[in-house]
Each structure stands twice: as C-alpha cells, then as structure tokens.
Length: 286
Image 1 (cartoon, rainbow, N blue to C red):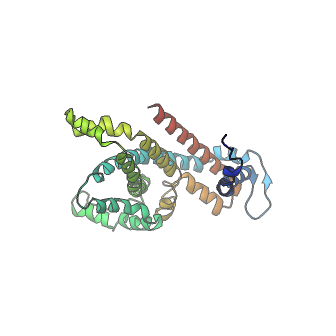
Image 2: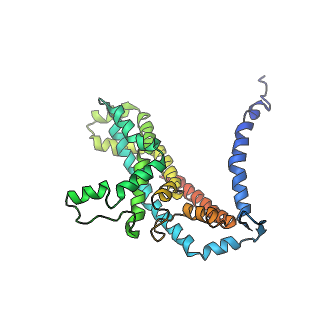
Image 3: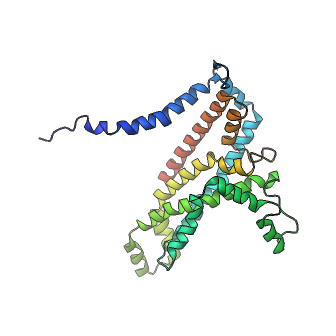
C-alpha cells in the first residue's frame, strides 16, 4: 500500500506562498483599503468610504486618461498580436546567419525602456533624424511635430511600444512554431497545398495557445504603459498622452493623494482583470 506523502509537499510551497503574499496579495489588499481613505502621506488617514470612487467618476482628467489608455489598447495590441507572427515565420527558417537576425529583432527587448525612450525622443525631434529623412526624401516640406502636437504625440509613443515589444512576442511565437510537428507540413506538400495555405490551415490554428498568451500579455502591457510616456512626453502636450498609470503616478507622487491614486489603481486592476478574462474566453471559444 502506497504511503501518503502527508504535509511534506505543501512545505515546499511555503516560500513561494510567502513571496506572493508579501509582494502581491498584501500590497493589493492594502491598496483596496487605502482607496477607502483620505491619505496624503503626511497627516493620519481618514476613512471616507466610496468618496474617492465618486470623485473619479466626476474627474475629467481621469476619463481623459482612461480614454487614452483604451485607445492605446485598441491600436497597440492588434499590432503586437499579428506582426510578431510574420517575424517568427521569417526567423524560423534555416538560413545562414539567421541567429544574428533573431538577436537584432530581440535587441530592443533587453534595452532599458528609459534608454529607448530617450533615443526615440531624439529621433522624433523636429531637427531629429526622422524629420531629416522625411524632408530629404520629399515626403514632407516641414518638420512633423511628433511629440509636441496633441494629434501625433500618443501615436508616436505607441510606435515605440510596438517597436520594443515585437521581439519579445516573436520569441513566444517562435517557440510555438518549433513545437509544431514537421510531418504535418510534409503531408501538406505531398497534397500540393501551397505555403500560404499551410500557414492559414496548419500554422495559425496550432499557434492558438501562443496567440492567447500574447493577446493577454500585450493587453496588460498596454493597460499599464508608463515608462515611454514618462520619458518622452510626461503626459503632454495638453494631457494628450496621459495614460491611466501616469494619472495614478501624478495623483500619488506629485499631488500626494494616495487614497485617490489607490482608487484609480483598483479601477485599473479591475479593467485589466476583466480584459484578460475576456481575451481568454474569446480565444478558447474560437
């Protein structure tokens, strides 16, 4: 008769549970509690109930930040879900020097976002290299205000997020591609199925688990974008690039309204959780 392992396996879970409890669950519960108080880090906190949430609902700056965040989500996520598939298909081929191309595509991922933001801020300047290229090739006669025009600023920051994320999600798809049995493609070639049809009917369906992972991860990343905005625009011009996370940062560390910032953080958490669940449900159904 096999002996029961008893409590021994659960003892090995204690370190992981302690880390998750200390660095995830406790801060989350503390933020929820703080969202019900008036706390400015100086005076003693005072319980105000749902006043912070009512204030959020009436704050035009909050709604502007939420709108920018949702627009960010709608533009960035489709690019980061679809484009890396083609990059992965490209670097999945057995060609000379292909490892070098993989490293080049992945380089933006391991580069600090602060460094990346500073480089792109210089690229986007009116006297920067991008405007020099546009003017010298005759595409435009005048410099484009990428970061100083409210109509262009948010989309310019989105381009940086897409650029930095392509290599990361490409690696996820590349792992998925290399797990697909090669005999499926060999059988398809025997049947005379073209490469494009193989991609549509074999590759894409078998990449669904990877697509689900990328959709959830890119959605979460788009909802909590901060570094690019902070380095390149600091929410300007005219709050055109102020996202929800940047709104929380300003409320907490510039205006010292910790309770109000915590309420906005709880709203961000609920939106991110809901979006992740919807993504998983839709992709699993398909």
